[in-house]
Length: 196
Image 1: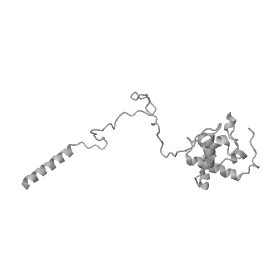
Image 2: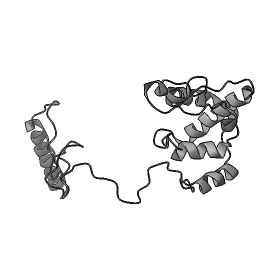
Image 3: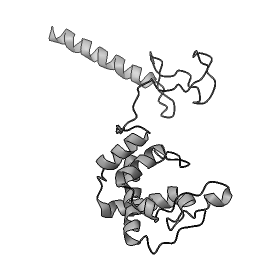
Image 4: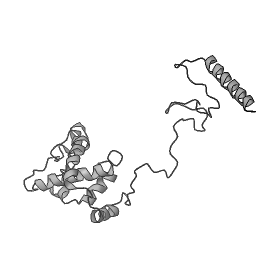
């Protein structure tokens, strides 16, 4: 019985060895795929037309109610009442020293074109026909609370558009920390108003 089993195992071993030797060994050739389960379907470029989908577009809008990753809800609306509520309720949650450093970079990139490097509203944008922004070192701007400034950056005010799409929540708080530090370093009596 064991002799017959040994011969059977030997025959299987020899058959598998011969089969392995017959296989073409080419490391540059791709493996054969069996039942790829639609892994090799046609991919349309994102902005190209798509004849398969009902609206004819490849890139579909997100489902209504979809929230992006890292989304932080803001429970205020773009109304004067909510601006006053934000003024009373919101405080900067960031460390002022580290936030001020980041805020200087954010201010330079996003605020300087309108408000100017010195926060006086003398940036390049008004020179090209855009309305002059307020002097951030002026008395009215210095009275704004952090919450009011955050509301303005989030929703915009008058001619200033919303910056919520460009600035993260932390970047908005950082630029507010920077502006407040610059306002505290300047006295409104010594800061001349820019002629508009």
